[in-house]
Length: 399
Ligand code: C2E
Ligand code: CA
Ligand code: CA
Image (cartoon, rainbow, N blue to C red):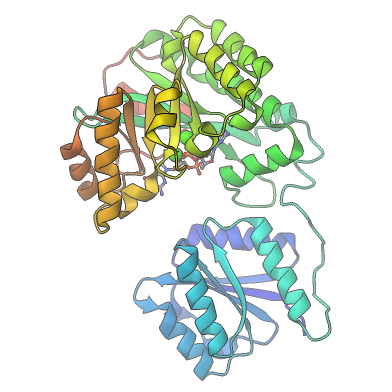
């Protein structure tokens, strides 16, 4: 048996494009549907892999699975979702009980590596061990990225920065922005930044990548920061390659400009921050002495203790967006947010609340105390031009 086509059902067209890109790389045909009504189950064949998003408006994934079982579908099946892995696991085991040919699940954001593993599972599950793979690929970025150097990615504009504004929760004015990486891949229509970052890490290029990315991005926002000393710009750095040289390169970048070092914020994830080596701690201290601000990213996911937090030289905490997305219907999530507000207040950390998507979440956060808000409700990440456009409405000094 051979898989030669992916049939995907997901109400989010962006995800269909991602899967389409993946299918193209491995040489499989692809058909995407945004609603269950469009899909005729009878059209699925034994050489299809049916990828089903479990949260489809108006249709329950469990019902769809029952339908598939009723039609005695012979297609392979994979469940896809942004839900917890234990929900995915329980649906996958239901699929198995229904004797569906479930290959497992794909967590959103879907990574090419997971997709590739799934296809390989199908390879070993197939009767004759033949898979219609026209091209064997081990990493999603080859060859367009592998053959080029880090500087080429930027020169060819395959990598570029976007800026997500941060708003004062009370005044709703923009007080800063986070610089995030974007990838324009010649084949894949979409590459998640987090996936790209781990690719660069595996390649061993993280230090040169980060320094180049920050230098290119800083040049874009320098005037904005120089003319508006109350604005800040945050960058993500990975603690794995924090050493003296790296810190010196970053400090050197900043010294090219006349904005204040305190306008630059370096974000390190909580999980990285609490297990920093002595060398990384030294590098962090150098950054701190240079005057930049330090922020703990994805706070709440890294299991740090208050004692560890107090000992680290951080200025800001960014509460992870998973708590924000759950805060209106999960008491534990809202308790964690409240506790983080209290902790930040008593330890003197600034607080950034990330991933605010609804008015209801915003109201609850407003009531919890003062903070900065970064989320789709107020603004998605923007090009530098659109960021300046938005700032113009605030009567700032603009280039
Ligand atoms: P992060 O540092 O936690 O960045 C915030 C992420 O949350 C961004 O995703 C942003 O687009 C997203 N976000 C912001 N507001 C909302 C919202 O309201 N709802 C939802 N659903 N999402 C929201 P993005 O750009 O995909 O970046 C993902 C991660 O990739 C980042 O998470 C960061 O860990 C990493 N990353 C991105 N750029 C860089 C970089 O230049 N260097 C390093 N080391 N990591 C980076
Ligand atoms: Ca961040
Ligand atoms: Ca974060």
